[in-house]
Amino acid sequence: MKKVILSLSIAFFITTNVFAAGSSSGGDGGSSASKTNYDKAVIHIKSAKKYEKKGKLEKAQKSYAKAQKLLIKSNEKKPGKADTLNYLGFTTRKLGDFENGEKYYLQGLAIDPKHKGINEYLGELYVATNRHNLAIERLGVLEGCNCEEYDQLKAVIAGEKSKY
Image (cartoon, rainbow, N blue to C red; front, side, top):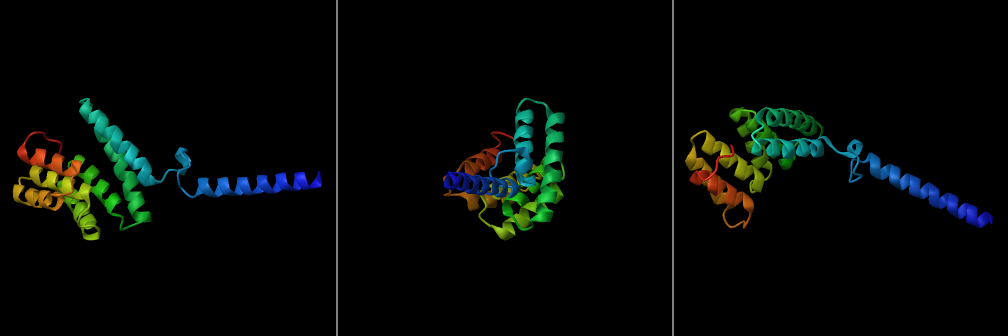
């Protein structure tokens, strides 16, 4: 009986400590408390895109602003992440600040020159700022990737849809 109680106590102790370590590390725990600022920002960006599609532009702008604040915090805590800089550029551009959006994109490209998201979104920024030759350069980087980013940027350059 003592062995059973001891075994159960050890199992409980191990399970409790493993769960506690997993939930405090900011991993895949699933609760909002365990999500990183980057993860929370991505949720706001997805919401903002849905609002845009529905024509609810004011709500979209608020979601982009919330995402941007979270991304700035994320970038301060863990600088040099291309994905963070990609979304910083994206939210900044969506909020109408093309100049600083471009700066974030270029910082991201310095880290990962072939980043699909950055190349697509920077190309869209170039279209929006009437620098089509630079947009075509971004498209050239994506050529051969067999990815949706290539198709989306190509459509924006061709004028088929405007999402900048």
